[in-house]
Length: 189
Image (tube, rainbow, N blue to C red; front, side, top):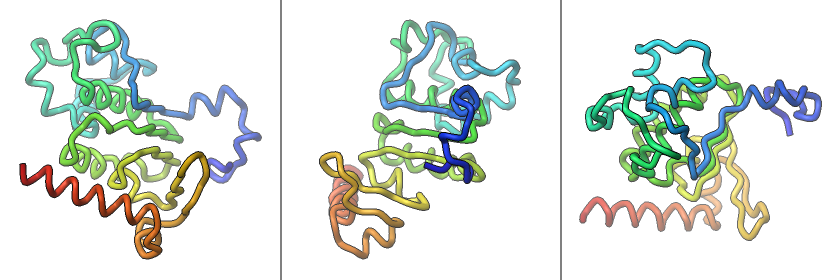
């Protein structure tokens, strides 16, 4: 596998690890404040950058709900936050590190489709100039990718761009149609 045109086996392991920003489906948060969770792994981060990260991750609109803003404690593993808030806080922390490689592992699964759309639009800027690996069950999360690999029962069954995969009419196209219908029904409710 190549990252930035270099075979990963040629990378120094510590260098490779430090170049990765990872956002898992089940996020890990520290028992500290929102602001300190975002800044974890950074020597210094100012308020303006923190607020920009909140916008990028879609957590900015939630900030008013928190009693002490960025100084609000999140509790053990983020117990005071919803699943979507935890994922978005972890996303802000990963982006704060300005990683060369950004891995999003079903990292927006706990947010609604409209919130996901807004975050993905903001992430377009973040993903420029870096390697981004997006793992998702939602077609909307991967539709903008340069290359999509569809995995079924542990095997890659289709590869291509969003448009190429839709044109082929296979598993990806079927999943796209089902998810689009589901979103339409959800918006009508």
